[in-house]
Image (cartoon, rainbow, N blue to C red; front, side, top):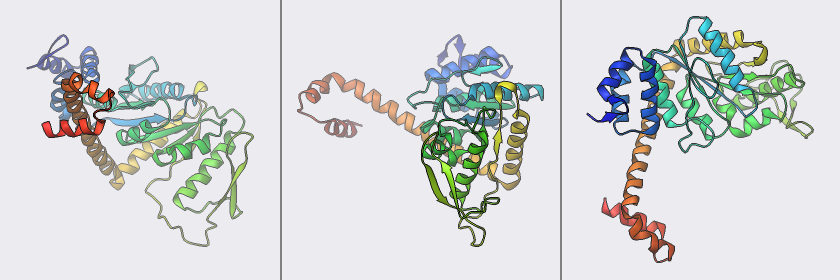
Length: 330
C-alpha cells in the first residue's frame, strides 16, 4: 500500500467514506499532484460516482461567470442541495485547479476532482472555466449541462461562434443584461443558432438577417430559412434557450436553474443523458491513456537526456532520431 500525505490510501478512503471534508480536500490534492497511487484511489472510489449532476459554466473573461456561479450555487443550496464548485470564487466548498497544460481552464485533474466530489455525495458539481479555448471542449465532455455566459459588449455573439462555444452550449446566458445591447445580443444568438441548425427563424420576416460583428463594426448578412423549404437538419431533442441575467442583483437566476433542470430531465427522458455520460467515459479513458503515455515518454527522456542533449544541440541528431531511438528501446 503506497503512502499518501497524512497516512495510507486505505485510511484516506475510510475518512472519505465517513464524510470528512478534509479527506476530500486531501484526495483532490493527491489527484492534482498525481501522487503515486492516485489512479488506484480514483478506481476504488469509482463505484460511488454518477449521482451528482455536473453543470459547466463557461464563456469569455469578464462575462461575470464567478458572480453568476456564486448566485446559482446559493440558490441550489437554498433548495437543499449539497454543492461543490471547481472554480475560483470563495464560498461553499470550492477548489481552484491548475490547468495542467490545458490553456485557460478545465483539465483532466479537474474532471477527476469532479469525480471525487460526486463520490463524496455532492448533489451538484459546478465546473467553471477561466476563458475560451480548448478547455470549453473539455468541460462539454465533463458536464451534463453546459451554460455559455456572454455579455452585450465586445461582439460576444460573433466571438462565441468563432470560439466554437455555439457547439458546446446547452443554455446561453446573456449576463449583465441591464447594459445596452443585451436584447440585440439575444437576437444575434438566436440567428446564429438557426444558421447552425438550419431551423426556421420565426418572427424574422426577411430572408436575410443582419447581425453585428461587434460594437462599431460592420454587420454580417446571413440567409435565414423562411419556412417554405424544409430544414436540412432535423431538430434536436433540446433547443438551447437564450436567457438574460443580472448576476450582481440575482435577477434571472431562478429561471436559469429551472432551465438547467429542464435540460437534465429532457436528457433523461430521451436517453441523451446516458449517451452523453457514455461519451464522457470514453473521452476520459482516452485522456487517461494519453496522460500515461506522456508520463512514460517523459520518464524515458529523462533517463537519456544527458546522453543525447549535446548531440541534439550540435545538430548531429534530430528530435525525430532521438524519438525513434527511444521507441526501439521500449
